[in-house]
Length: 171
Image (cartoon, rainbow, N blue to C red; front, side, top):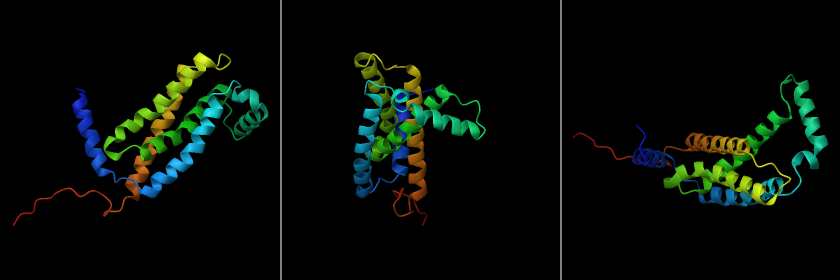
């Protein structure tokens, strides 16, 4: 059975296993994150769709991938994969910038950002298509980013950087 308190307890245990990022890592994440988020805003919150502003680039990319043998890839699938790929850094940045004891919140940043973007497109940009599939693809990418960040954190953690768990020694 699922319980919020059980999920919170598991999240807190995981948070204790993950060492917090260095201050310099958070500074770099914030410094790189700002231009990245400006780029995402320009990509998603302008009236023109990407395929209208860069049609030749997308056609070249699609043809190159199809020449490599992925013939089933069409523009719709490419768009979904691009949405996943663009939001992977969102998950990584969220994991690095959210306090470690509240790391589970980093899983909500991507879906919240995507929902905000799609809502803004729906309300203010009538030429843009706000879709649930975009929210799902973006959320998937952000979740992959969080998992990737956790994996890299665990790989990079030295035994001395991991929080110590109390042990009882027999005398």
